[in-house]
Length: 576
Ligand code: LR7
Ligand code: MN
Image (cartoon, rainbow, N blue to C red; front, side, top):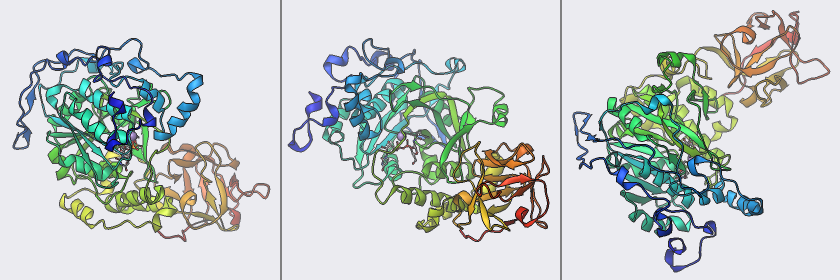
């Protein structure tokens, strides 16, 4: 069959594929998994000249919208309608073995049909939205390194099945130097049989996802580039709201809501529409709750586009010309990481808009660990990429990054001059502007008096989060001058913060806790007196004091007595 084909004559069946994947191109599954081409094609296929007049689209007109759903559930297949797949206990050992290949449940994925049905996860308000009849075309760019067959092809089929054909110019697959047999000639042969143009490009050597995407983007013939990870499933109606937003304003970069495909069961789990993208001091992308401010701006309409400070990075659409105008990607970034924040900052600071479109849902297999190698070492690569973001876009707030990541100062950033020139050329706004106007809720404070360690005059030891989480006690230990857990910002809003957490107390005496900053003063307000060197808790009037002899690691609140044990120095010895 198709699956025992092999590359270069060495004909052995890849151990990854002992099972045959339910595949709409394989005759025996054709009936079960029928691509409903009649319905997909009932929109008139107009030849697009994808030309554009003075920055406006000359788009394709959709004659009629497809009825949903495009893919009907097939009885008897596991995982239909996005349900969880359960592996029988006797197969658990093989399942665990296979899990290691991609860091997700490959056995489950292989059992699910390549064009499985999904529930319609959209809010009611999305179902009767009318989109402009004139929409730009898009090319889908999917980069991968050693991706599994079933996840990659399920991504492709979900695009084919659930995108209005006239809008779908092509699918571009970029193989980033994969070492798996099935991604070789077999993939090329398979691609030829698909009902939409699928082009495969290969990087010569391992380039990382950023440069691989740049290679893919170079070949895009559609008016809009849509990037997807190689383990996604697009849901009904995912594309129209993305493209229509770009048609309204070509400087809008749009993301779907990224739903969760479980790495354990491949269950499709709808994500919250009340979540947006932020980042922490380490420059990790993180999800946070959408603040009331943004809900109000949208007039309480949960289906309205959500302005997000950052994007996750893997799934978004952007006008092709705007992508290049805006400086595409930083080619100096390797393998993985950083490009998502880099593009987010760049979009906002250079006059664009970054949005999550709640009526567009795409699932993504989230995993705990990365399955592939990071040549040169994970932390070196990730720190290198993040440092480039900090250096080019963050102005003095780059200090937070260097202070928080002791390792970062020794990692070479490389040449960022062309990226800085880009920032000049596009007359981009400052990071201060971004924090003020786009992300006032940021974990990085807009106004702060101090960033560094906080040392007790008597003990000469330093406050230390000990890497603890929200709700746990603040600690204290010898000053190491390396930053990290000993870095605190004293802000104009009277917070003493470390990344997401603030010093917090709800009593006059005793230990101080680290609690997620709420920005409302209250238990998190402190006053540092530069004269008598006290750190006073505003609500209780108590002073921060060195730990008692019984527990040397636990700084305490006590009645102010102005002794040396209550004196603190905010003056760091480390440099970044
Ligand atoms: O060297 C590489 N070459 C590649 O082609 C490394 C990766 N890749 C491919 C890989 O096969 C995959 O298709 O690049 C894609 C993304 O890699 P993942 O799936 O390992 O990344 P991720 O999902 O863990 O990480 C998120 O952050 C990345 C930062 O660089 C990218 O922006 C990913 O696209 C991004 N994924 C998403 O936004 C999906 C939602 C996850 C979240 C949050
Ligand atoms: Mn991914």
